Image 1: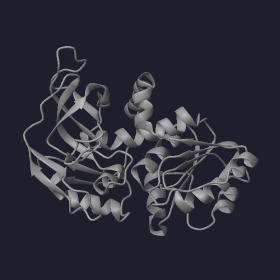
Image 2: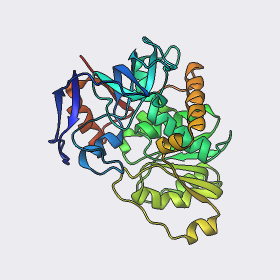
Image 3: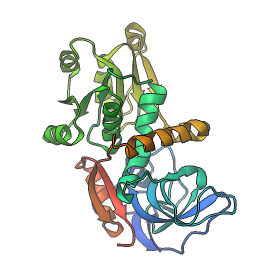
Length: 326
């Protein structure tokens, strides 16, 4: 089978290449899936560079999440051959077949394509875990989402709007403002360069934001701390800017807000019942037509380099989805 292998760590993707591998053998507790679509996430890019908190042993097959059809199960499995599923593991999705722990799979929502299903998984579970599980999102609250053109940011916007929140989308790219407004439909899109606290204050009529959902870090995080209302929550999602920010503890003390770290995958592993409930809630929203993942481009797996480069160069509005076997 065809698979995207990380052979050596490198900043320029030179250590990553397509390879022919035997179809993986399913271990106990795993389900063998024929991959119909797999989506690219920022951690996939970071892992090719050795700059993610998870550092798989080399060589490894890249890819966190997929959608596909079950082709082999164990005797006690809840799935059967032919079931359409979404989910994934820490690695292995960018291949024609993947052996995935059963706990990492869920049914593909009814009426959803494989491409949309692959684009929904990790981004939407991250958004839901951060907004609902950790920040206790309520209807009518103001939410600021930074990194609004990325898959996780767009998922957070989509979920927050579906739950009745008022959403400010933040982007560091002026040229993306109109596209984000048209495609994601937040209440307002702002440029998160320099000082943007006063603009947030004007939009919210002085209230500021009940929740700030920040995948960006760095300078954006620094300014976002000034955008949280009293007793609000600032959800730390990641550091796509490349700089891990510091904060003086007097800032959350005086403003009375909480800083919450989000690791959605680890949350689901530590609290499997909550993980299943999160997946069910997202699937219900999808089947009811309340959420709809945005896909920037769908590519055959042999064009993986194009997708990775587009992510590295911040060209995307939505997810890159790879289709193996094309």
